Amino acid sequence: MPRYALKLEYHGGPFAGWQRQSGQPSVQAAVEAALARLDPAAPAIAAAGRTDAGVHASGQVAHCDLAKDWEPFRLMEALNWHLKPAPVAVLAAARVADDFHARFSATERRYLYRIVARRAPLTLDAGLAWRVLRPLDAEALREAAAHLIGRHDFTTFRSTLCQSKSPVKTLDEIGIDAVAIPHGVEYRFRLRARSFLHNQVRSIVGTLERAGAGAWSPADVKAALEARDRAACGPVAPPGGLCLTGVAYPEDPFA
Image 1 (cartoon, rainbow, N blue to C red):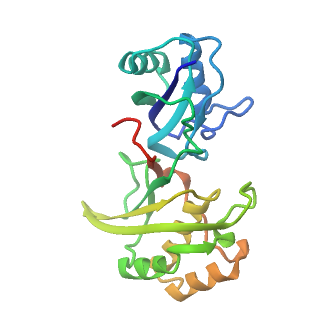
Image 2 (cartoon, rainbow, N blue to C red; image 1 turned 30 degrees about the vertical axis):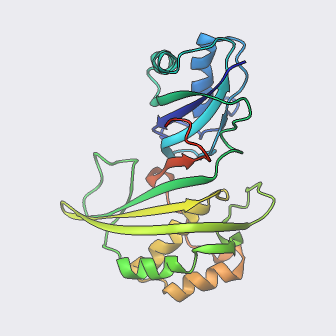
């Protein structure tokens, strides 16, 4: 069966997450239902990242096997037709080798988390960013984040439901930009690693926000990491601010 890679964009608000769950809407189920309209015997698909409920994606990657040899552009168009009206879009499709795996072949995942500091509630960005009332100290954010870059035991920033065999991960980058917007400031957290633990990004951002707000010092974030204790973590940031923006492979299937 020919194998295809799909680059996906979706709004996570209506979904219980990527992974198919009995009785609940999921992104995986929506994509598989669209694929079933093209090939009723199509097997289950796999994705690079199992995003949680309410988390978005602009660069999720999944792979599927189909009986028919589709021209990638036509496959993309057909899937987008059958995905309506779900807030899921196929941005690109590509024929890939039979041993390509969206999850296990990936060498890097990239996430963006958005915090907006302003007094007024969010309207256009409702569900797409975390609103805080007061500006954050960008330098304190960066100083605190520096303690988390590199290879560490991230037990503190790992959900108790995480199924990963090891809490040790290498965090390659945490870039933080503060951008002036009308009536406020937007803070953009860019995180990059080969892989992440369950809730790791939201746990890190929620803890860093405490440092930016002045409730914690950057040294407190370092101490929380070294505690290797989930109870030492700050609050977990809301899911709506998080977006999976990209997945890297040894060779870009969409190039």
